[in-house]
Image (cartoon, rainbow over all chains, first blue to last red; front, side):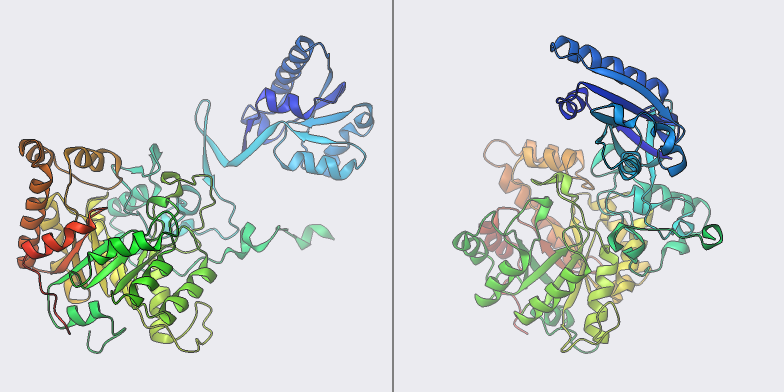
Length: 222
Length: 310
């Protein structure tokens, strides 16, 4: 799923500093699963903003609405009747949400309340880790299901680099070296030969480097 | 290794069977040409080639190719270093052609320290290709006369291709295979990480020799003399992939006040003596970090002077 972290209250307060009435739009998709932008978090942010603005002597009126998803035109319609009642709309969805909203409602302003961080999952309660870089050409079959593009700090295809020590990455003693994990798994399975070849340079056109991407599934477009 | 691939001095020295001796010089954090020239002047005639680092430890410095060019003009042979952190393949190939045009004939291909270590941790890291692919790229440009896209190069760059090997990074069992991979990709010579754990390096070299790697590429053992106990402790604790055994730190401590640097040099000299005899080791790469003026003395005492003229 897409993982996000909430922006600081100060940053959000700054965004809405000229507003008297806002809508906070949550999303029931990924950000609900990673506990950052669902109905509960919308309520928490609304209260925090109201308290902070009351303290400043500039009360803020805040309404709450959590959409089914913000990455789907059908569900974006869920605020059609109310979107214009506010000075701005603060979206708690990933970075996709404010953009779909902005495109659907050109006369309104939309602000992000979260920083969209990565594609990943929860490894423990309250901890999420990156697993996919969305590079558009998956190569993890070479590495027994582990991705060096997303998980190696240098995205190298021939690791581990000289900075790998005791299974950890050179940039952070808390960060597992994915290449250490790949090599150990290959060794345990007796398939080290898989790594003893020079792989062609990656074609980054399918990643963001090739420009904004679009996926067309013709069977669904008819 | 039949005919010359680049015609570099380092290649000729190694091919003639001499025990190679290379040095290192980091460009300044500025355009201070005089400072750079002062640093590398100590290396002239003392080494077969001088590694010119490329924004080492991710700290921005005068570009490696520019500093290398100044060396060529002053009659020293550079070993131009290039890391994969700062350039995409277009910039890399452009610079490879450029350095050859400027008379540079050795190139060391490296991944590069992550920018988090340096003085611009906010920067984007590139890693379009990795060090293995960079080695293969330089070889393709040289031997096939083609760019990465298979288009012909109008006058291919002839470079003696180097790669790094760190026998002390983990997982240790894989390190010799990674070295083999780099040689397979096209490395003509290898310079290792600074060696302090001699037991481990002996074992590593034995494995490399058993695999016949020393017959496919020239392996130069990395030596960095310790200047102080503090430096030894720092390298032990803070430099990724560095293995400094306690016995080395204790030996330096035991040298007594004012004698630590000499003890560091003595250990380096003992290492060089052993490397001269060690099977599979074709030379030494002396990285006298910010201690370039000591290189003549170390070279003299190591008995590697005069350097061969081939």
